[in-house]
Length: 308
Image 1 (tube, rainbow, N blue to C red):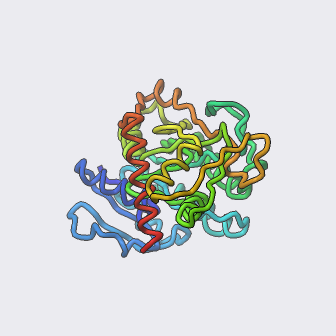
Image 2: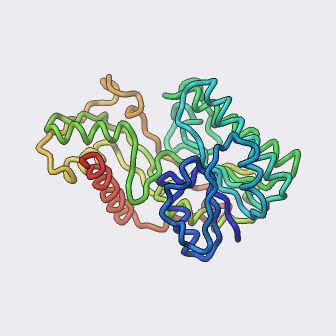
């Protein structure tokens, strides 16, 4: 099958591209940094350097495509930027996909649309309290994008599937809060985290697996699914950071009610994957110990990148 991956030059996009090529699929990438990809010599790979909000780039990218995986999105929390770039590009892509009669459109959303967890684990039926999100305008834009997808499914019969996840990783993992903890460890300063808080990490192999299992299954059309590989507490993540940096930093775990640090660290973002398991047979491909080891390696690579 021929896949279009928007935002394919990012870390998740590159890992997904490699995985699909290894499985003998053809991949086209649309990304403003597409020329930086290291897959240019693969016979089943092509790239288009362009912006998602450029109608001609989007129209050309969708031609002849069977499946779209829409990863491209800024992490902006600026309303005008989200409207002019992300949401405009999203609608252009939906219009082109409907016109081309694409067989399946996958959208990678975010757990941020839940705003703030009201219980654990979080299910797809939980309220989307985006006004309470750490990045409310980002969350509102992502939720709006989901609503457009469902409307195109119902009004134009475009087969769409929405995946929500918290934090993805592959050979490397990014994220400002993670890098901040690494910097503290490098300096030998205390790493302070709240107890009873953490999140569900998703390995890119499990994202790829979910895509391929759900592919063209009518029961996944017009549906939203949480995806996760494993849940780790911030205490566990901090211990991994101390280990990979060979740091002498002490670890301080603060009761959740007394936490005054970054709001991002304050909640338990444990996602239930029961719906994905029930509807299309999703299962993590990695055992918890394997997933933890891969996360450790990804954090170590992040540390090496920061040092270079």
